[in-house]
Amino acid sequence: MTELQLHKLLKGVQKPGRYTGGELNSVVKNKDEVDVRFAFCFPDTYEIGMSHLGMKILYALLNDMDGVWCERVFAPWVDMEQNLRREGMGVYALESLDDIAQFDIIGFTLQYELCYTNMLHMLDLSGIPLYSKDRHSLHNLVVAGGPCTCNAEPFADFVDVAFLGEGEEQMVQFVQLYKEYKANGADKQSFLKAAAQIRGVYVPSLYTVSYHPDGTVEAVTAESGAPLPIQKYIIQDLDTAFYPKDFVVPYIEVVHDRAVEEVFRGCIRGCRFCQAGMIYRPVREKSWETVSKQAKCLCDATGYEEISLSSLSTSDYSQLEPLLNDMLEWTQKDQVNISLPSLRIDTFSPELLEKISRVRKSGLTFAPEAGSQRMRDVINKNLDEDVILQSCETAFRGGHCNVKLYFMLGLPTETLEDIEAIGQLGQKIVDRFYAMPDKPKGRGVQVSISLATFVPKPHTPFQWMAQDKLQTIRDKQRHLVESLTTRKISVSWHESQTSVLEAVFARGDRRLSKVLYRAHELGCKFDSWHECFDMHKWKQAFADCGLSIEFYANRERSYEEVLPWDHLDYGITKGFLKRENERAKAAQTTKNCREQCAGCGANRLLRGGTCFENC
Image (cartoon, rainbow, N blue to C red; front, side, top):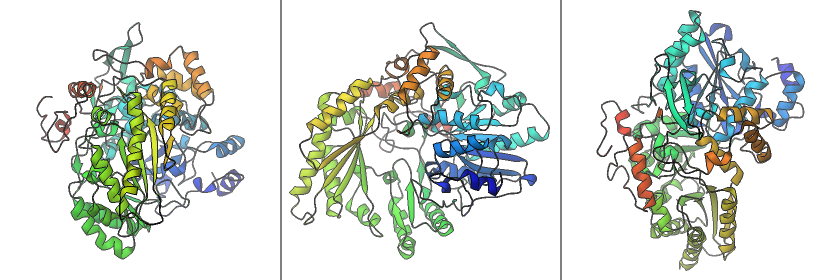
């Protein structure tokens, strides 16, 4: 595409900065001097994709390889799509402005289930066949990574390869192999058979799925020497792992417009609903010296005035105190704010508050997840009400009068009393504020409650549980609002229908590929955006394909059933997940990993690691 064509495309587009490229630290190479061109596609808008850390890491990693050029691609919004279709043009990469059809490898990062139709949408816009079986050449190899590949079955018919686990080393091996096979003029099938031998590389076409008459999976069979099960790839040492020295700095505001430094991977807590806390095990930390050095380098290279310390639970980082002490020496001097976006409420202290507020105050968000103690025990939150109230009081004493609380609705064994307890906890926080003798004068308190609908996810103790039906979810939302007695508490929630669809594709099997295809034909795209989501079209797609939403979302599954993702090994043993599911039903908690090993099995993935007791 020429600059003139680009200017013509951008006429009438709401946010042209999404589509121009040329940002600080973006990488431009001579395409005639590279061997492999990689289109890194984020199937959502620029503002969301440019906030994603994984994309930043792999973009820098691939461009650091000799003979490889990785470019960024984002899903065009509705207005830009209309212009592309009018001009007969496809989705293009920001660095070269070339259509993705010109690339060797087209890679998608799949962060959430409702972006699947956007993957099809982007391929279709560029005239690339959607089904893997219809792409016969090694050119335009479609690959996918991200947390959604822990159950890649719903989109298995469309991708040639799915990457399980962490990609820094795995991706280098894969691209080097592709480079060799391309240079030798090899065919696609021989390459895929060879690639399947790389740890964590799943080639769906090398596996056959059979079904029982009732629609459940009977078996998954490997072909052509492909491994079974397929084990995820993990990085052994984060201190020596690749990490970018700079980030591409966007021209327009994005969702998380700041530098991001990863402090550790995994989680010690074991919340039973949390997929990330399971699939990213085992816990591996960077040293505080590495974190501080990398964070300083990023801020210097990008000019950002905020650095976010990223993990699933940053306050669980064992070296947080020396890290913050070291970082404050240069962040205060450079007027850089330190953001801790993933705080555990039970590790929140006056000392921590003082440190993170020293440059400027940031909003405080906590996640009790459930209102009653029984429900918090069911999900293994290991959090007492007294601790929640005391932590909120600590925030109030530190000058914060607005607190946001995240809860989940529709959790297994939940009752209406548990729903009411959410509002009651909010009321107790309000009362605690006004009971303080030294509360801030002339200021009121505001407690914001945000509700997410529970979605049973693969590789978690709740993977067998049913999701509440849509009407039940709405009744519970209404019941909570009606139980509130003060305007000091506000309640918001996500659209319930999208949560139902998320549950379908989170636990779906390979037959859902035809539903995705039919939904795409009906015009489904940007399904996580309320202005684009259309449940009527989705219901039609399921009906046309002879499949049931309720079969996937609202059906409890037995321990004996073969689950669609059982052949994808993320380190967590099924025995551990069953034990945790039974403990949930009995409202029994399990200690966190630093207090006592629960025998989940993930440590066997480490070099020299052992599988602990009870596995």
